[in-house]
Length: 213
Image (tube, rainbow, N blue to C red):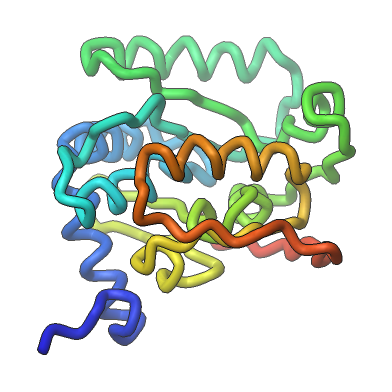
């Protein structure tokens, strides 16, 4: 009997994850080009990663329904919009021929605009990993980073159980309840096998983790 992916040892899960995400050719291309860009603390994160996994496990095209590819980085040396915009423009040229939206964001600047957009304050992130820690669901909290040799780093603070088990579990450290529930409704329509867990009454305290570049 085949062991479900969610019950494999964590190193096996990481290897399975790599095999799955590399079935999405757009992820392959974005990772390779991002490695050449060498932005500080960069990751390809969130939606394009877990949605590729769910697509493959559901027997769909790996890239089906993925709206954008989130490329995050952390550069606290210049918090101006002009500096971030210069990176965004550079990345737009790098990924222009792929035909998908690669959304680039400096996580060191998120606290400057988050409250205006979502209605709750965001403490400054000390690193990209701290930003990933605050994504609205545990299955979303995942980032991939590749070096120029093709070696892949995976950051997954909540492991892979929910990701491989089609479980959407709230991660109430920052994003408001409404953000989680809106995403949950959309994702449940896209992947009917998804188990959506309710927002808890008590919120957990945020955790800040950082990995060396």
